[in-house]
Image (cartoon, rainbow, N blue to C red; front, side):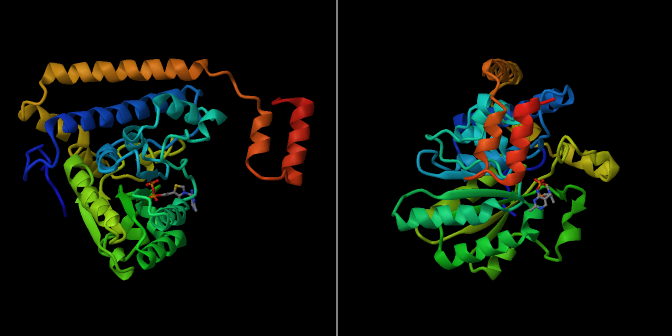
Length: 344
Ligand SMILES: Cc1ncc(C[n+]2csc(CCOP(=O)(O)OP(=O)(O)O)c2C)c(N)n1
């Protein structure tokens, strides 16, 4: 397993990026963490719809995003990757608007190489392969990062996507965030494989395991996979070993199935804490510098949430016209009921 930082933030190898970049990576991880905490609180106040926080998984998604060039490379998310998407350029204001269900956030801005959130597990993987294959056919220098969870590896879409990517040598990195759980199902309950990374061997390309709570390990692993993809050598499957420290979604109560000791063990491996220890011991930042970053992130979130709230409320009729090319009978009758009675 690739690892650069041990659990106590001690560096085991040469740091694979500059100190400035490491500090910037830490800042975006923190932004993702505080965003998720804020959204859970807003959801509890009834001001947001159901959401899936990425608390505890920030190093996996930010480290991977840092290995991409946002000008050429694509980020294809599932739904628990917000921190990495922020690194790739997704605006905080739109992230807030997505979580209140505002249609302005349904469309990814044109200048952003990113697909929308995907609720259907692993449904984004065949799309990511098509996108990557298309880039290759067009001699476009871009590569594609497709992110999904351990549960996604039990979906047919996962196997079809990896098979085709291997055959076509599509420039795609499959980043599996193994966070231990698919809702309440453990990895051991859904596969007899010793690892998820080894599934790549059957499709004819490398599978690598890295410490998903170590920003440097994920970055270096994805960076090498990006180099392979750009050189025309095809896909890589990366299994980032991490842990979901928060809720599956705001509709979930993990205390009903998660062993307390396991949770506590992973709290000790918190990727943010690990980076803080490392950055302070290396002299990149001191305790007051960390507090300053904390304040700056809080302020950014406040400004973005204020801006999001200024967005005029959408016309509910909009929702009826956008999902399908033509309106089905069922949708049509819902629309006419809405036109007669409004939302009441
Ligand atoms: C095709 C499909 N089947 C079932 C579901 C219901 N479902 C929502 S989340 C989830 C678990 C996904 O676990 P995993 O892939 O490990 O990702 P995580 O949520 O842990 O990030 C399931 C089964 C779904 N959204 N899509």
